[in-house]
Amino acid sequence: MEISKVSFRGFFMAKRKHSIEWMIDRVNEYLSGTGSYESIAEANGIDDRTLRSWVSAYRYHGVDAFVKGSGNKQYSRDFKLSCVETVLNGELSVLECISKYE
View 1 (cartoon, rainbow, N blue to C red):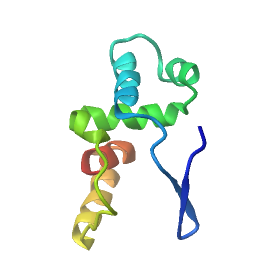
View 2: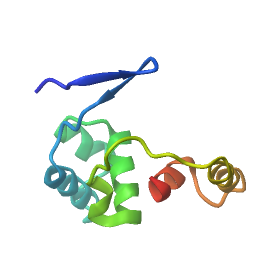
View 3: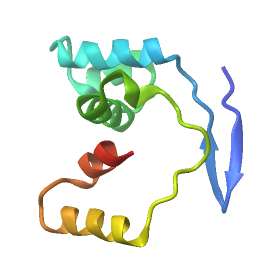
View 4: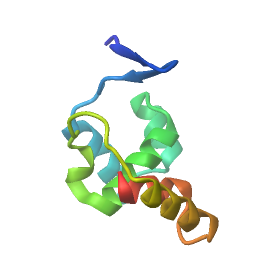
């Protein structure tokens, strides 16, 4: 399956390659202890970092983590600064912060 790409300021953003159900199945495989991030990712042809981000997002938002919003989100300067401070203070990792507020 070919991934459709859209250029945005030099970066390429891929449209969703997998169905929501498929992604949730991979998350549930990990959460049920079926395998490690690496083994599940390798068996399904995805990067383990992708699976980690899905699991983290799912832990914060449940199934809603996989429902795409329309367009780019706009965040205030104050909100962005509070997120940076949260990470720098060690309250959340970058991945946890992204998962929580995305």
